[in-house]
Image (cartoon, rainbow, N blue to C red; front, side, top):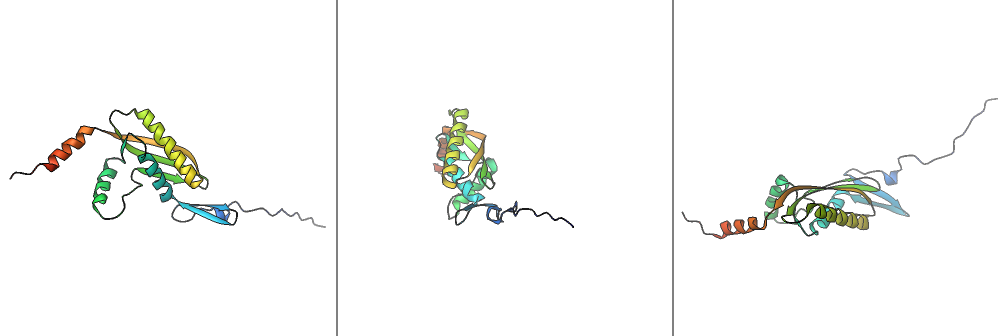
Length: 159
């Protein structure tokens, strides 16, 4: 007589309802369906939240800001994801924010404010747990830089 053992039926480790879909969207099963949140959505939320903090002059490094200025001249909406990179998992997200700070602002306080605002916005709007928000300060903006740029652009050219 041979004995056979049967294993209890278990759910597979890669459940279709929580698998990442192409395009880096995260899916979560909730009751009677699934909700998919694309990386770009989390990036936009984080970008808007970071811009809301007093002391942030702009987002992105030098190259991203140049591309952003060119993009602003074209019709359409501004790029809210400029300077923001996210990694979205099934239930968690990590955010990297690159900024230009206003001169005179305490950078450590600014980074803490950005971190807090981004975490609150992403977690409340998506339900994802934000594991970290890394803030990189690429530059400091001086108010007199704007005044000098306005003066040179408003002066008539003499040839």
